[in-house]
Length: 314
Image (cartoon, one colour):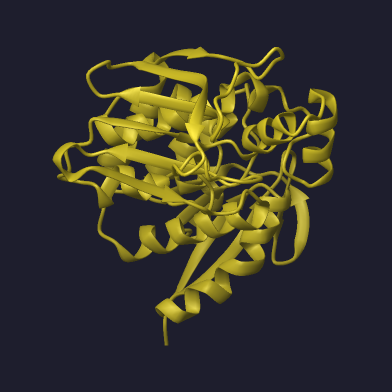
């Protein structure tokens, strides 16, 4: 009989609940008995179906024998996500995370802790949810001469720009995106370009080893009046980085030909294209922006952490 693979999950919101509901089912086809043995909230945790006080994470990991610490918590400013990820690595657990804040501020420290422990930190849920942009950046394109990366990585931005092109006002377009479940209650990071820049900072770190904390960002917000768009083009929020300009990420409103990979996107769709020199452009697109999609990305990362003998960021 297959030995259980215990998992401690941080976060009980939509992504965390979707992950907990799916992880056992998705592990079985791969011969794995994946089990969420504890769920940690902000102030309480659940074990054996019962909610109780939050306990010390290293003690919980040791007591449960957890091999994976999965994070599906909102980005924070109090350092808890970073602190718990480091504690998990030091305790010998892999880290699977959809949380971005500590990846931006503690990338180098997490990498060092992962290498020292012989464990991995897997970040697909933070770089594109169901779209496997991070997988291409870190492993699939290994050995390719990746000179630049660019893309439309924020579904809200694409949706809003298309509605503006149809004649809608900005407030109306944002409200429609919120009703459709595409935009957050506070869409400011989507419209400002901050969310797109965050994802590109992480992809650049995977591609070229840049430290996200040291990357400078320039971002053009979605705010009328918008640039004029030639016929046959669609306005897109395009974020990019170039290998020969280390430490710089730019977000621009750019007119893309409708037939291009970015111009052809509709609604909340996303795409990332890699300039691979003599190999040409390689583009990945698709993957729904949803709690279910983010949970599936975390499940994929969990399977990879358990099945693959790799360390460091993946």
